[in-house]
Structures are given as C-alpha cells and as structure tokens.
Length: 617
Image (tube, rainbow, N blue to C red; front, side, top):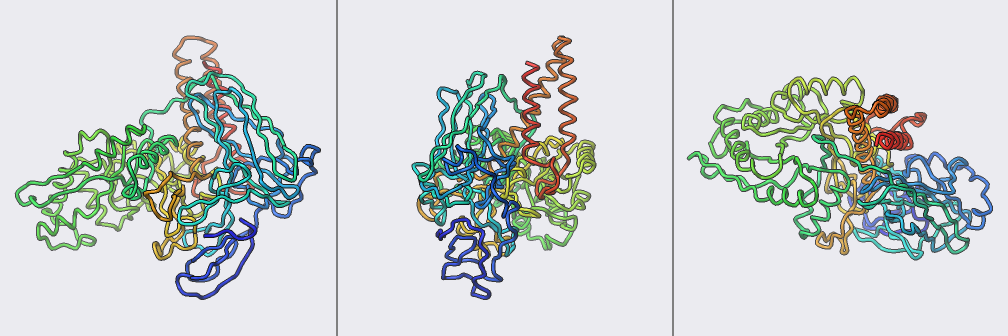
C-alpha cells in the first residue's frame, strides 16, 4: 500500500468494474493506493461525514496566530480529515483524571486555518507522578461490513509522531515516516495516553500541551492531571476474555509473546480463548490407554501468570470424534447420526484423559467445541454431551437460542451473542435461567465486529460493551473477538477474499507492527487502535462501579452514621445514572438522535462514581 496525494481524503473513485481476482496495477480508494484489491464491483464511499460542509467558528486571536483551532469531540472516531469543529467543541485546556496505577485516554483535534507543515506537539507535566504519551489518529478507508463493497474513512490507528513527522502504514505490517503537514481546512486527531504511577499521591497537577507547525505560532492548552485518593479494585469471579489469535506466536520469540500477554493484561483481560492446548495420543485406546501431552497449555498458563492473567482460559480441541471413530472402526455419520454408545464412550474417555491430565495445570479451562452452532447441529450437541460427562467445563458461543434449548444441560458457560441480551428483560431472563440451572452467564460481542456496524469506527462501542453494558447485564464474563486476524496485507482492507471468501474484511482489533513485510519474527508489538483502547476504558468503567460498590459495603459496615448516609445516597444516585443509560447492543450503531448513548455519558458516570468513592474514604 502506498499513499497518494490527499491522504485520507474521502474522494469517491470508480476506477474499475470487472477485472480478474487480483489487480496488478495500483487501485486508489479513499486517497490511498493499493497494490491489489478483491475482484468485483467498484468500492464506493458510503456516506459523507456528518459535519461535512459546516463552517468553522470564528477563531480567537490566539487561534488565528497559531493557524489552528483545538477542539474536542464526543468520540475520537469523529476526527475524520475534513471534520469541522462546532462552536461548543472548542477547548482551551484538557483534563485527565486517574487513580494510582490507572491508564486512561484524552483526545483533542486540531483544525488547520492555514497550511501548516511539520506539525508538532509536546507535553510538559513537570514533576507530576503521571506520564503522557502522544500519538496521532491515522485515518484510512475501511470496508463497512464483512463483504461490503462500500467504504468509509475511519480514524483508527494510534501512531507515533515527532519532529514534524508522523508514522503511517506502508504495507504488510511495515510503517514509514512522512511529513506531518496539514492543509488549510484539514483536521488531525491527537491521542494522549495518561498513566499514573502505582505510588502516585493524590492531587491536582498542572501541565501544558503545546501545538504548532511551520506557518503558525504555538497554541498552548492547559493540561490538568488529577490523581484520585483511592485505588481501583478488581471484582472476584468476573472475567474479560480475549480471542488471542495464538497462531501468530509460532513465528515469534518468547519476549515477543510476553509483550502481547502483558498488553492483554494491561487492557483488563484475565483469560484467553482458543489457546495452545496439547497433543492427544489414542494409539493405546483399545487397551484402555489414552494419554495427553499438555505441555503447550502449561507453558501458556505460566506465561499468562507471569504477565498478570490468572485465567480461566478457553481451549479448542477439534477432531476427536473422527479420530475415535476411526480408531474403533465405527460406521457413523458424525454430523447426522445419533452416535452409538461405543463412540460416545470413546470420546468421553478421551476427554476424561485430558481433564485428568490438566487438573493441576494451574488455571481453569473450558472446552470449546463448534463455534456458534444452532439447535440443528447434532454433532455439536453430542460432542458437548461427551465432554460434560467427562467432567470438563464447557463453553459455547451461539446466536440462535434453539441451541441453548437443546444443549443447556451440557454447558457450563453458555455464551450469548450480545444481541440476545441487549434488552433489560432478555438479559434478566438469561441471567436468571443460568442461575437456576447452575450455568455461568457469559456473552460475547466486543472487539472488531462489523455486523451490523463496524466497531472500529469509534470508542463508544467497545467501551460501553466492556464496561457499562457488562455491568448492566450482570454476566460473569464478557468475551472479545478478536485480537489480530488480518487477511493478506493487514494494511489493506480490500484484498481479503483469497484468504477468507465469506468475510474478506480484516478481522483485527489491533494491527501488527513488523520491521520486514509479513515477517512475524520482526514483530514489534501491536499497533493500538481506538477500539483496542476503548476496551481498557470500558474495563476501567466497570472497576469504578465495582470499587464504589465495595466502598458502600464498607461504609455501611463501619458503624459511622454519616458515612452510612453517604453510602445510601451514593448507591441511589449511581443506580439512577446507570439505569438511565439504556441497554444497547455494542455491535450496533447508536441512534444519532440519542444524546444518552454517547461516550461523554460514560465519562460522566465514571466521574460521578469517583466522586462518591472519594467521599466514602
């Protein structure tokens, strides 16, 4: 992929109609040149940004001298290149509020009033116990659905910039630098990652954010960094799990793998899905001897514990029924027939051998069979029956409730797609049904889904899903799909059909940074995205609510009438705020006219929780 003039411009280009599968000549989409794209109808722009055509507000004297207006949107996903600031969005300063050991994000946009070359930004926090990392929001064209021929410009990647240059994607995981130039009328989004030291003392600290480029003076914004007088606590028995795409690790070294795991833990995850598990030996099955080498799983557990992820994990193991059928010489159509007892026993024995071997591996695991089966999938139902009989914990994702109706007695952790629990009544029904049967209520629906709306397009979706939505459902676990599963060039969302015909859009919450094209041995870590950082923000939202709930309990148990009264007030006010935030599927776009389903609403709820926690200290 190569950049062309007018990077990220939302230009509609109809450059082809019926070419062979892979185009040899570069194709331009949204201002970016791609070496190849999938065959088919032209890729066309979906819609214009909502603020397109709006006139910028009259600048102040300082803004005129700097040649830019600094402004803050509700969501960083709004910083498309031609985004024009509204009058109420202009800012003279920024504020970040953190607890000791917490990392959070602040964003700000810069709208150029004149041509600015070599744009730079710098943060001065003096002696504050808080660090601030600056990145820019890289915009690029992305498909609007798994097979969509439509695209839209998305501010997605969070990439470094310094000394008048910014880092941008080149091709196949490799980055390059280019001048950070802004044309008159263009907008650039900036991302500030704010981290407080674990030993940070409470207090308010003043800093500065300086913005400037050749062609204008420096624009200075105040930066207030507040450290709160308490630490966040993590709830016991609640899990954030991630499909980790472990196949990448086969081409990576130990420290590269550990870097991924530490990144997962830093974003709130304590368990992984579809992890390395082990090798099953059925050669002695006829003599009653089945062995399982669980070295891969034990290695993973040790790595995860070192990184701060105690589990549980979810382990896939396919193919056992077919191997047992062959070993026993049984005639049976596994996908259609009722399995004979001898086959069921063989599969159960194999599963039991795995359960027994791994019982002291150091972290609980759940068996993961068929992905998203329906009630008509007799193979999945019978396989789960065997693993359940063997004593395994079992996990199944599903979007059709008829699977749960037929397989519920064999499932430890039925994992509902978020749409099935995105209404209060349905979430309560699922939660209560699981409690009645002794099952664990899990759901999935955060990450990089594009059905029905791409989660990459803003902070709200994953933040709400991993945080307030998780809290409102009352579930035990929420599951994110998926970390990094690109098709072909990870920096090209339009070339995936040869690798995944059904879902050619890249399935990536983050993107790989490689020093050499497609060479994972040169992996430098993940390129963070708005969607990835949103998961950490949601995790922190949940922790604020949990920490407040614990503070309320402590205050009531402490015997201080004044604090008990404060606890009652805090609980009542927070319950009202959370209840006023409606249930909404985090895989769907929020209605534009809804002023409650907004990122700023989530921030207000967090801030209110923080104030109540501090008052109960």
